[in-house]
Amino acid sequence: MTQPHLTVELARGKSKPLWLGHPWVFSGAIHRVKGDVGDTGGPCLVVDERGNALGSGFYNPHGRISVRMLEHRRSTDLVYEPRPFPVLLRERLEAAMARRAMLGFPGEGTDAYRLVNAEGDLLPGLIVDVLGPVASVQLNARAMYEQRDLVAREVRAVTGADLVSLTVTETASRLEAIPVMGETYGTRGELVKNASVDVVEHGVRYRVNLETSQKTGFYVDQRENRKRFAELCGGQRVLDAYCYVGGFGISAALAGASRVTQVDSSKSAISQAQQNAELNAVDDRVEAITVDAVNFLKDAQARGQQWDRIVCDPPKLAQGRGHVDEALKKYARINTLAMGALAPGGLMLTCSCSRHVSESDFARMLTEAGHRLRKTVQIYGQWSQPEDHPVLSVAPEGRYLKAFLIGVS
Image 1 (tube, rainbow, N blue to C red):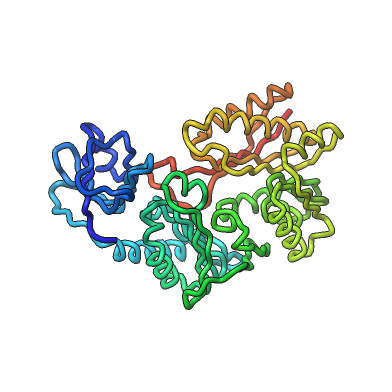
Image 2: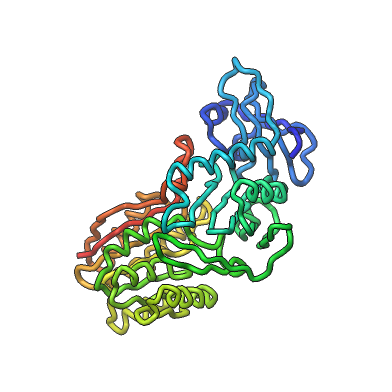
């Protein structure tokens, strides 16, 4: 990435969040852009209405988040010169690695963790999960996509990974106007097909196929929640809805659950869930069914089937602020059905990874879902993402994961 050739001037009164260190500039906060924007934008200097430099980043003319900030100028008393992106990238990757080591990652019994949590690690638009010998990189911003070769080299240099996997999701493609991709490279830069990786989390083993996986391949954000929920499952009948590769259900089985039912609409996910049950020698107590969770719960309701412990962890249902109402209706339908399948005295962990759905919105939805069943919802715990998913204090929207441990009566 070259030095800034664009200048983004903010509208009057829009600069305060940037002085405080907010990582984003939305399109509505921009007065004008000076320079040759072209079709893809590029490195930019961000200034306030008086021409004071606020910092630098990358301008994307197609994104609602128009600028993702790489550096902030904290005071007009200081001369500001943007530093080269390769220098910032290496510096921040090394800082992230040092902090993860301080937090105990990797540790005994766990080699899957998040190394870079985008804005939380001062690298907006970049996610890096370490999955054993693999560094799985999610490119959520045009700047990171265009610098993907550099990103891959630096991530490999810092982590020592055997394989580096690069992914652009359909959501990022739509929001940032970049191509969908999913490629894995070996140590010599060669393309590796159908790669899989074995990881361990609190002693539980998982095998993940990187080519058919979702996002970075493994949802490390639920690591501590899987452990906490499993500790409540001894001797219980467990339903893991939207099980993906079997995280919650297999953890519960290893913790002593009497029977675990896992459901997911993805054949690939169910195949991996079955394989992971065998890896952990719990396949005699775990069944995995390829079916839509809503349809499964409707059929269970018709049969009068119930479980003592239920986990509902659907995919992101709100892709933006404009989708929140629709998402809440879907959450309400899922949770009403799941509550109806919860045995008396049972516990349910219900989750949302949609950052646009607030905790208060989610709690209100649960209240309404319970009301439909003429039941009262009791919240026993509110869990979130773990410490390897840091959030900037100035941008609390980075705390996206909500996990409510509830009962109904």
